[in-house]
Length: 137
Image (cartoon, rainbow, N blue to C red; front, side, top):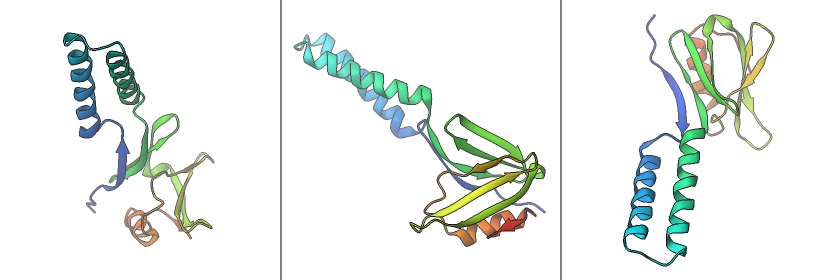
C-alpha cells in the first residue's frame, strides 16, 4: 500500500530565518559604510550573531511519518527509525489538554514526539494505523 508522508516539521532553517539573515547582514554593512555611531554596528553584529547561531543550531520540533520510517526532532537533533523498529505508539491527552505521542521502540527505548500538542489525536491514530503500527490509547 502506498501512503503519503504525514507530520509536521518546523525547524530554524526556513525562508523567514534566511530573510532575517539577509537583513542582519545588510544592517551590519550599512552601519559600517555609513559610519554610524558605535552602537548601531554593535547592535547589528549582535543581531547577525544571534541569527547565525540559530541557523547553525537549527532547533526543530515535530516529526515526519513516511512510508517506511519516522523522523523526529529531539534536543540532540533529528532522530530516525524504521517503522519495523516501532513496537507500538502511545497516543493520548495531557492534563493540560495537549495531544501526547510516545514511540515505543523494539529495543526498549521510548521517544516522545514534539510538536504534536495541537494535533488531533484521531489523525495521529489513523496515520499510524495505516502503517500497521500498534496503537495504545
